[in-house]
Image 1 (cartoon, helix red, strand yellow):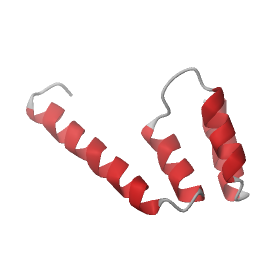
Image 2 (cartoon, rainbow, N blue to C red):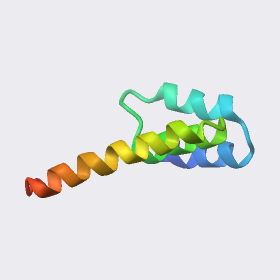
Image 3 (cartoon, rainbow, N blue to C red):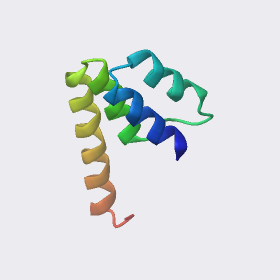
Length: 68
């Protein structure tokens, strides 16, 4: 959880290298929120939009299968 807050702080400071460094230190896949922050700070808004759309579709499919 601390990584998430550090990532947000560095994003506010406009430090994309620090944001990506924090993501690299994790032992697991970054969460959707962490990916969004990383894409926003590097200006990859199109990639950010695609990630969000993919997760929305995944959630909709699981919801229709009553897995949520």
